[in-house]
Image (cartoon, rainbow, N blue to C red; front, side):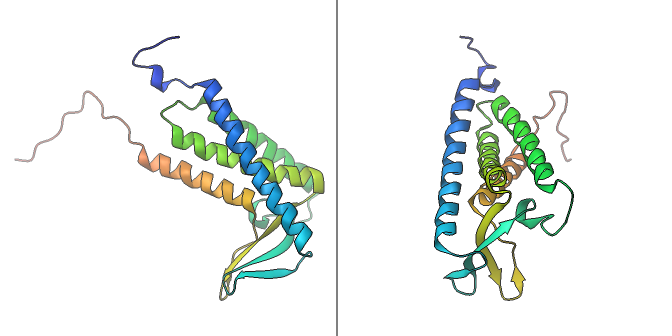
Length: 182
């Protein structure tokens, strides 16, 4: 095994794969469990208040993309195209998550959350032809499209990636000399 100053910057494929699989499978299991509980408890379109005036559980079928994008469009082969797009995106996310170095832990977690959420929704799309959404958040006239645990995982993952990108700073060049104010 190689040791030295550059060791921390190299990806640890085995550790990355283990954490990727573990967290992703946990997200998928929790997503599928919540969807099964909701679909067995309430009828399609039924709304059950969780926090009155703010959040309900409302069972809906999303045939489009995240947050209902393209749901109302009638594109030929829409389900196939959305699934294909999701699978390609999952491949890219997996590739980058496995290549992340050990110092990029926030990136790895963000990508893993995205991957687990995408898998949870793809399972629905392949098995049912649509995604089960049920978390309905609103305030007065403002209404957010219904979503699920997988969508939440994807959003948190994207948020972590953004946070990580803001957190990173490029190292200063060795040739740069600070300017002194006189």
